[in-house]
Amino acid sequence: MSSWWGPLASRNFRLLLACDVISWLGSAMAGVALPFAVLAIGGSPADIGYVATSSLVAMMVFLLIGGAVADRLPRHRVLVAADVEMALAQAAAAGLVLAGQARPWQLAVLAAASGAGLGFFMPAATGLLPQTVSEAQLSQANAMNRIGSSLAQISGAAAGGKSCLRRPARSAQSEPECNRRSLRAAPRA
Image (cartoon, rainbow, N blue to C red):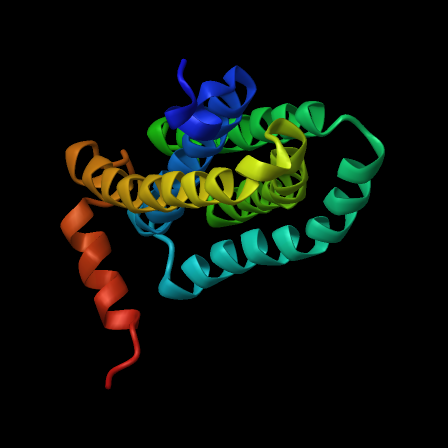
C-alpha cells in the first residue's frame, strides 16, 4: 500500500483497529440491551442500577490491575484474553435471558465480569497502539482509532436498542406488563 494510507498501511494496525472497533461495538450493544433484559425478566429500575453499577465498579477496580498486567505481559495477549472474557460474559448473559432463566443478580455478576474484562482491555489497547505504528504515524493512528471506537459505540448502542425491539426476552410476564410495572416503580418528576 502507498504511504498516503498512513497507519492503515500496517497490517498490525489494521488488526488492532478492527479488534478495538469490534470490541467497542459489542460492549455498546450489551450496554443498551442489558437494561431492557433486566426489565424483561421482571427486574425493577433499581435492579438496572445495580447491574450497571456492578459493571462500572468492576471496570474501575480492574483498570488499575489491568494496567499493571498490560505493562508486564504481552499486550496483544492481554487484549485478546480480555475480549474473550467479555464475549463469554455477554454470551452467558444473553443465553440466560433468552432461555428465560436470568435473574437480576446473575446479570449483575456477568456485567461485573464484563466490566472487569474492559478494565484489562483498555490499558492493553492504549499501550499497544504506540507499539504498533511508528512515532511519526502515532497521532494519525490515535485519531483513526478514536474515530473507529466512537463510531462503534454509537452504532453498537443503536444496534443494541434495535435488537431489543426485534427479539424480546421470554419471561413469565408479558412485556407490556413488565413495562407498566417499571413505569409505576419509576420516580415521578
